Image (cartoon, rainbow, N blue to C red; front, side, top):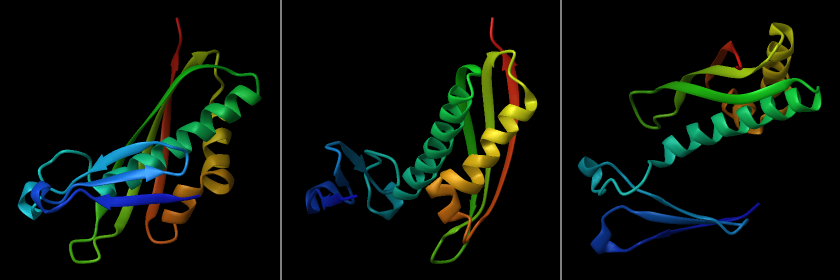
Length: 142
């Protein structure tokens, strides 16, 4: 896996463009009080979003492979960071909202558990320094 991150220059404050090995680009920026212009998400926000995306991907894939009729999945993440540098994540909570037809509680719980313990590289890595908790709700699809 590769990525190149380039500072966009002194005139643009603290903005950076990341170019991923898969050919995608995104802008990151700092808060105005840190010299940024708020042109994009903060790097730590992307780390949190990537964790949510990684785990949600796993949950949907596991449920689909099990032939469960999942129609939507979103995960809300709340993180607490250390107050002093390095301001690492201390706690992260993931709340999954899984929608589908006749989804079973045990199937959703198993998918989340497999993501947490085996497949989600991002949350497993962050779990080495942060307490990570999960919960979920199931919404019946129309």
